[in-house]
Amino acid sequence: MTMKRLSACVLLLQILLFVLGTIYVLKKLGDVIGAGAWFFDLGRPVAALAPYLILPAGIIISSLLHRNGKYRASTFFPFVLLIVATAVGQLYLRIVPDPILDNFGSRPLPYSGFLFLPSEAVPAGFQEVSHNYTK
Image (cartoon, rainbow, N blue to C red; front, side, top):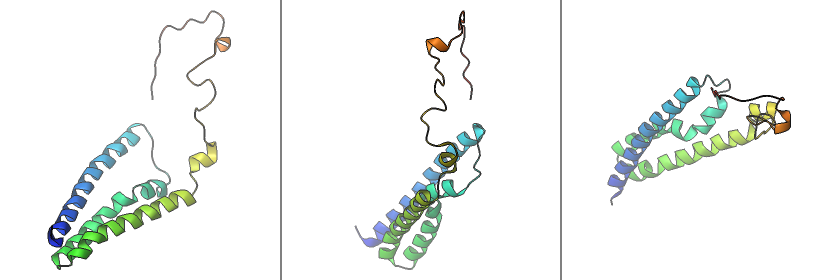
């Protein structure tokens, strides 16, 4: 496979990944907003999505390099860009503390007995007739 063809394939792969990533991110963002949540600290989502967010720049630079005949640079530059963006995003996530963990600590359950009452905690004569779970 020639470098020209490989460069074009890498460019098409970037475009495909960006389209699929956009669909995935929009769906997940819809789930978050639908659940009534929102991001007050945009640093963490941006750091987690750094490889996706850098794809448009990679697509533009790769297409310019491909158009100018620099096929080797057009092939390898997007990978270098993705590696750097991923490393910087992960470094940010490791350095900047998670505000939820800082405030509440790591808890597997919100509190002991959540969604489960031991038999000694159930009032005498209590009889459960229905369940209603909501968000």
